[in-house]
Image (cartoon, rainbow over all chains, first blue to last red):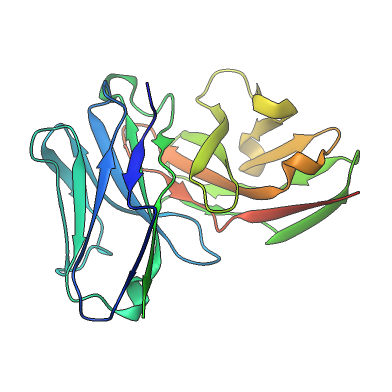
Length: 116
Length: 113
């Protein structure tokens, strides 16, 4: 068990460019979550998957954001036409559906995006 | 809708002093409650959780929290602060039957020698 892995750790991009982040959850976890954390705020829910199905999306997830989990293992989060307001830490977490919320989530270390 | 309020964006204590971080929640159904800790440039680590068993919950690193339904509170305490406790602490709520967490804005704990 190597925990939840996120890549890259840091990404600096110019406004208007597209970026993609990757998350590898704990191998036996079938639920995967994406959260966004801006400076001075707590994490805010973006979306989550159970296996390959995207079960819920937040209204924060504008049409410039898309997330996939094609084989029910790793997930990618893509932001198109980045804006300065997208600068944030993007956190991935995973859990086991059969446990519900009894054990909370295991978080990765995050990808810090800076849009210049 | 569920929500979390953490009183005090910053709390300063001396090493060896009592740590008290406040969390109040709003939930229409019995909640699950969590405290997470975040060190600089890292993800969140689970400290402890309340899932409707014992109301006094013990976690890692000597932290504990008490669920008080009448006060809708879940305050985090530690009898004696260590320098290594300096970090940001987040309280979060989840309602039974839901799979998402709602976080508070966080409290930065500063520990001075």
